[in-house]
Length: 208
Image (tube, rainbow, N blue to C red):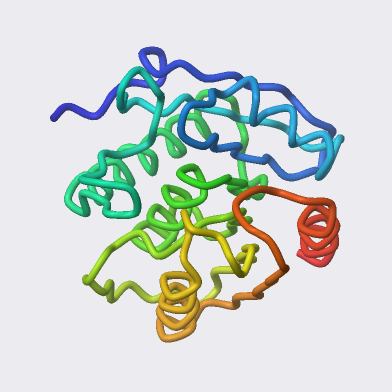
């Protein structure tokens, strides 16, 4: 499969204030780039925003990678799409003259999963992640890339049927094993982003 060029990949870009990070906003299944971009203003209204569109479709819904069933990912496709996203980030950094500005991925659900996969496989492209309602993206596989210098915040509901706590526990273990600086926020409830999640993410971003 040929890696798509930036001009062929639907996305939006908004310039932020000088010195502020760039938030890479990654939508969940069935959503799109405009929806998730609106979340950026609640996290850092002065940040630049880059929001690409998931390139996989499932029953007409946009996604970032294929899955075999609910919660069962096509891991080969996860790896492929993570590589594509890493290439997109590198091309966007040059195209939009981002320079050395810090890029922080903010993903929800399927968007969190592709952010995690990309950062765990390609830390040279992405090493800061805010993962809302994400889970471990590699099934039974492990990765061996050093994540020393990478930072993650993982925010989940304890009773989320779409991102089971067992998979979140695996995610935390793997991130720590690979040397990442990782913070976990667990709340009562299920899939979604609530006010406590947002407050924790804003606090984490302020300490970046």
